[in-house]
Structure formats: structure tokens, C-alpha cells
Length: 282
Image (cartoon, rainbow, N blue to C red; front, top):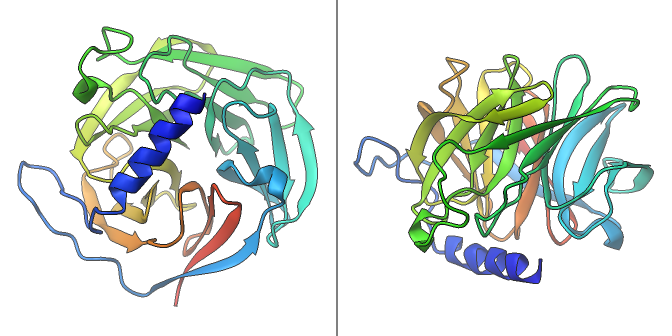
């Protein structure tokens, strides 16, 4: 676990030198301008015990669920908009490396236990928690394009995902591909089972994706990285990366890993120093 965290810190340092915009597809450098009209405000700080927040999800009544990554308790924590700890929900689940949270319209919560910095895991899974917390299912999966664990060449170690959303009856994952700097979008069913994830699309990007969320109206995808927030217009359920609209610069906000839409124009972010950030239109 220490080795994985060290790799994460080194990668964070690398991304500080990447400009906000990314290199978009088609083999050419198509420069997308930074999205204008947004402000990023530091609004609160989480309790020290939650400083490694690695996912965010609305919990109702203006509160949010968050959780901690590998090596920490298997617990969901409900926090207020001021960062205060309101409640906790311990779960009878392993936490190999929890990385992101998602929710479907029925209220089921999905916990992505798929952190895989070394590209060597064979127990990738997403836990599905029913709205009342009584039932827990496991969605196990493999990547269809991974053959060795880990790949011999570091440039081929691109099987770490830290970003998860639910959309259209399926779960969608986005890779943190620090080997070849190509983000891969995979999808799989949202019901219990053992699956080979479906590779939907690829996008060359310098940013290392650490979180994702879909806007409540389903028309915008946000991908979080170290120092940047990338936005995409969504026109097709399966093709989420086709229409990038630009990015919001988050430089100076640290290692941001938790993201959720509050509504169609406001987002909440957390970083691994326990800070909360409010992203909103001016």
C-alpha cells in the first residue's frame, strides 16, 4: 500500500507540469480553451480522520457520502456542507482500494473497489449497496485488453481506474492511464456477476483521472484529475468522450480525488488533505 501511495505522489508531481488543456483525439493536438465563467472556492475542511477522502456522493438534505481509500475502514461517512462528520455507516466489506462512488435513480450506491496503481490486481470489483443498506451485491470484472498481471512494460500498465459513474443501466469506468496517457472508457452491467468490461472508447489525455460524475440532467460528464477538471458534452450514452468542451484549472488545490454534482451548475470536490472546494458559475 505504501508503494502504491508513493506512485500516486510521483504522478501528482508530473501532472503539475501539464497545461490545462489536454491533447484531444484524432492524432492531433487540438487545444481546447479553459472553460470561462467558473469559480473554485475553498469552503471547508474535513475532520483529520477523513483527510484521505476519495469519493463523493449526495446523501440527501444537503449532505454527502464520502469514503477513504485502501488501508482504511470499510465505512461510508456522511458529511455536511461545512465538512462536519454527521454519521458513519460501517460495511461488512473488504477495502482493498476504494476509489469512487456512484448512485442510480433507484437509490442503489456503488462503491468502486478497483484501485490498481500497479496493474496487478485480479480481484477488481464494485459493491452495490441497496438504498436501505440491507443487501450488498458484488460486481466482479476484468479488463478485456489486459493479458498479464502486471504487464512487463511500464508503458502498458494502464489498468488502474479511479473514476465511476452510473448511466443508462450500466456502470462506466475511466482509467488513470499513466503508462501511455490514453484514458479508456469501459462499461459493464450494474447487477451482480462476473464480467469482462466492455471497452467503449479511448481518448489521449495528459491528465490522470481520479474521479468522475455525470450532471443530474445527463448532458455533461466531468472527469477530475490532479490540477484540472475536464468537461464533456454528452450526446450519446455509450460515447461519453466524443465532445470535450474544455477544462477548469484547479492548480493549487492539491491532489483532488472526490467529485460530485450538487446540481446542473455546481460541483463539490475534495482533496487528500481534507479540503472541500465549491466549483460554480460566477
